[in-house]
Length: 376
Image 1 (cartoon, rainbow, N blue to C red):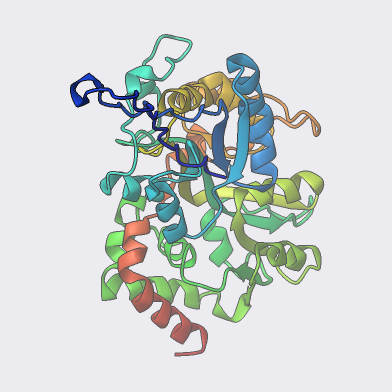
Image 2: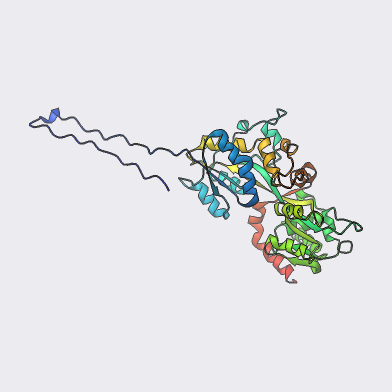
């Protein structure tokens, strides 16, 4: 709870008996006493297995190193609430891990502390942080530390049958029969359709912004329309795969790893045509612990810290030098490098999800997509 507002104590001086007015000294109010500041650093992060990996690899080691107690809160909330929280005069957080588009929007509104790349750790070979981060990870007010993505999960066909290797295989019903489990809205589905049709990642959103490009996406989806089953929650995609009611599923790489790691003989993952999203560390300008918050951001984005986190959960480090440091999963003893969206072999053909495009075109494309789904 916020500390109570300080009160101003006023010293009163009794009037001397028969004293002349000139002899009475004016009374000065006592100076306002600031309440003692807590030493806690309030950190807002996401939930689930990602949170656990973050706590073990980054937050607990930082707490031990700095001696600063951390209070862990949640940054998992809708966009507008996130922006409100960052805008507060007395923010509930001193530092937060948020989607990169939120960081960019809050920065434009003047709500965040600017990032100085020179204060971020260099790579072990001496390369500066600025040169070590992947393109787009360092912004004016945010340091994107991890990337996650949409991927294709498939049921392994068995040793005697060919195994799918690329996104185009999802659209080849003759070679790979069975249903395709897809999310119910246009996000990711339209992008994947154009990528599978040969559109370069840099051109996907330009195409989706035109009638010709949108028609091209729907024409590609028509190839599998009779073989689509829709999932409402991501878990439903894996239930369909396990029940053999789908051959392929469009899902997200964190859950895809967890499911495929539990069933490596039956499930595989295709990173070709992945749609990439980033999470970034930010510091609210109104924080009372800006210096300490910046120290945490610098610590959290050291290559060794990012590698330790990725060794537990497969959100890809955004620093190139961190990839080679990623090791075995502590429980599964699985090499985590092949499961990272930012591995060089996957990153080259990846598409960055464009939040601004969807904000401007959501209503139109959702209407068209739902009409196509219903047979229009």
